[in-house]
Image (cartoon, rainbow, N blue to C red; front, side, top):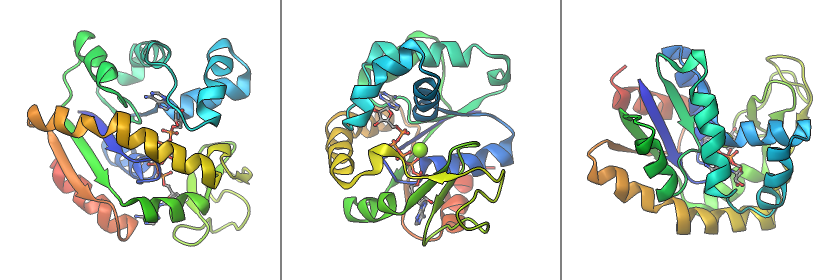
Length: 210
Ligand code: AP5
Ligand code: MG
């Protein structure tokens, strides 16, 4: 199954993608995680993306499309995948189509801006395995350490309050139009993203019919 997770920054795409991955045994392809790894490794792509990411802006389409094209060509993608954070613009969605990729379902996780702001201020991520936590809503059972791999929990640079507001603006202007785009294709499933993580997962699985 080929799935797209759509939603504002902090809507819970990464959190739900980890759970869908486990259930369906397909990889989570997060362009955000790929770009952050490139940045950490100091590759040309990472350096190109840094200023955009730090400012809460989208990395140029041609850079992200190339990243995704390479990633989807890897062997673990042959039975399907979950796209988390891609596409984020209409040209990116059109690029997927040009690659001949037929998406089965688009899950749109909808959360209001006030809740997003609260969530991102409390988010912690593992700097080793990338697992996502929240200091109140989803704490690590190992305190300041990751309870999956014992890595350190850090605050993402783009989770600073000013950058979060810029990311939300970018989302409304450039990514939200994808709701109409996929609705017109009859593959959009809208899920209310507020509430217990496990309840939201249940709604996602229902939409995916798994
Ligand atoms: P990316 O890494 O994709 O960030 P994002 O879309 O801004 O989304 P987040 O990862 O912040 O949120 P999420 O929806 O995954 O939420 P999470 O599960 O963590 O992209 C970062 C940057 O990279 C972009 O700004 C851009 O510069 C660049 N980029 C990436 N892809 C690109 C593309 N295609 N084109 C161009 N540029 C691109 O949850 C958030 C928090 O809430 C966590 O703490 C979590 O524990 C908590 N939480 C989750 N669910 C719940 C719940 N139900 N109730 C309460 N708390 C919850
Ligand atoms: Mg994420």
